[in-house]
Length: 304
Image (cartoon, rainbow, N blue to C red; front, side, top):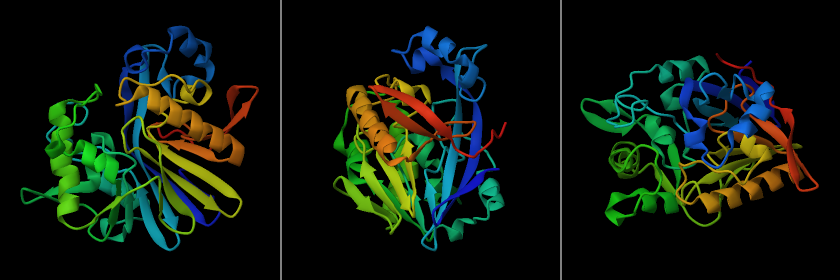
């Protein structure tokens, strides 16, 4: 089962790729090895390869059918992209066929939410047609935080901190996966701390991982969810939120945003839906006596 419903919103999970990504000691430098071993019984194999010590990652898109519209949350790695990062370079995957299997053709998409502008979240924003990068979803508005758009725009000369990819990759990502959307007039560069999508969905700014990282919040009937992008990478961060990855532009700010989001999720009984989790892919959290815990997993199964 890769589909569930919250209130009036139907949610589908479309996985582009999954596999070993990087050693956890590199990706989460402040997390001691003992912490992973302590929680091995539920981290392995969906979130961590206990044999190799690698973080097990999923690249996936969430499809929301909300208020009569089709909303995509992040667009993965894409095909044919010129990248130095081995996983992202010149891919030839079948993502669009997988999206079609979920009942969605490119023309059906009304809204694309880019939670932030890292290469593995915007890849299918565009596709290569006759040597040109064109919007994959021709009828969609692409919601992008203006803070992130300005930060990653090479014309503004930012200094990249993150070890994800390279300066070349971040510039190439903007050129082939972001700028064509803006040039086509399909980018909505939202500003401020909040942007309303429809009566059930809105975006909240959650800076740190990138300056414009955002969380898509869902409130429909009595159900709540937060699609948190890379505010959370591993479920260990749901119980130990002070630990960040080496991929954040501002690790201290990322931890601050993560703690705030988890506090809100616990208080509102919201399902926390990170971008890269395998297995059940999402969970509800509890917060009591200064401690966080995972209360309940989403009704999804591993796609391995």
